Amino acid sequence: MALSLDQRNSRSLDALNFFLADVRDGLGPYLAIYLLAVHHWDPASIGVVMTIAALAGLATQGLAGALIDRTRSKRALVAVAALMVTASCLVLPFTESFTLVALTQGLSSIAASVFAPAIAAISLGITGPKAFTRRTGRNETFNHAGNAVAAMLAGGFAYLFGPVAVFYLMAVMAVASVFAIAGVSARAIDHDVARGLDKTRDHSDQPSGWRVLLSNRSLMTFAICCALFHLANAAMLPLVSQKLAQIDLSMATPLTSLCIVAAQLVMVPVAMLAGAKADQWGRKPLLLLGFVILPIRGLLYTLSDDPYWLVAVQLLDGFGAGIFGVMFPLVIKDLTHGTGRFNVSLGVLSTAFGLGAALSSSVAGFAVKWGGYNAAFLTLAAIATLALALVWLKMPETLARATANEPSKPTPQAA
Image (tube, rainbow, N blue to C red; front, top):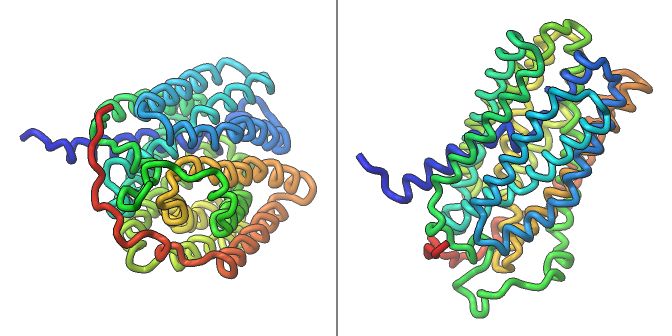
């Protein structure tokens, strides 16, 4: 039985989120294990190269969002970016140079900056604002499912063929995402709705000036919250990976994969629930729940070095990250509705949390060097507590900001 256009677009978006899951998040802890186990880099050097690579991609986040706002070739941008990531992964196994490792990861980060705003824009342009909440939950559900499957495959391949197998797996998934985006109909995307314009208002066919973003105090507060969240969160799993490598080097990659799989399997139902209930419960209660889990997780990591305890604690990441992944584009959509600056705002705030994530590896690496792994986890937990306090005291409920008369579905446009 032939699929309708809506069904084909929905399933293509599902596949895109599934295959881009590992590609969007980067090599992360796998790169840390590879550099530690194969090239015997120290934790501080690993943290620095990961920070340098992440900073290289930060400069393009806002530009990527602005480009997505303007272009009608969103699908082509996703395909080109995926191929760039593929090339970066295939080069990495053949070099151990600090400069070349940082360069390849920097190029991969630059390419990956396109994915988040492009997927959000394509989703919004196809579904319209009212259905965007559930579509976002579905996007995150398939994203986490893809991460879980990729992590299981990575663990198995790394056990059989060594840590280098992860790079080839990531390249294959990037290529598969190119086929997935090709299945999305270009004509189904309303590019005005995709950038956050409200066609129910007068003069809504023109985007607002940039000042509307800078003067949005709630948006700026949310940017700081995101930066602190990722400053606390990004280095936790790489630190756990390094501890596992010290305990049993041969099992470090499989156990890291188990950590990822455990968290991602929790994220699947959490993201689905968040997407289904965010319009009923509101954004702030869910944000608070996601943020409160992070400091608890940091503290629990210090209680034991047992590998299975570390894996069990990682389950909590499924709740926090699962909620945050859904709430992030929804809050931005709420705060920028009608401005026509949705994707550039998404890119700018991605820069904010990307900056936090980039600095996280260095902060944690030097904390390990000065005081050990427990000192690093406690440092990250303190930062997470600050982020929680800021959300609680300063972030408003943004659901009420969304316009009551949003169009239910955009009008398809020609490519």
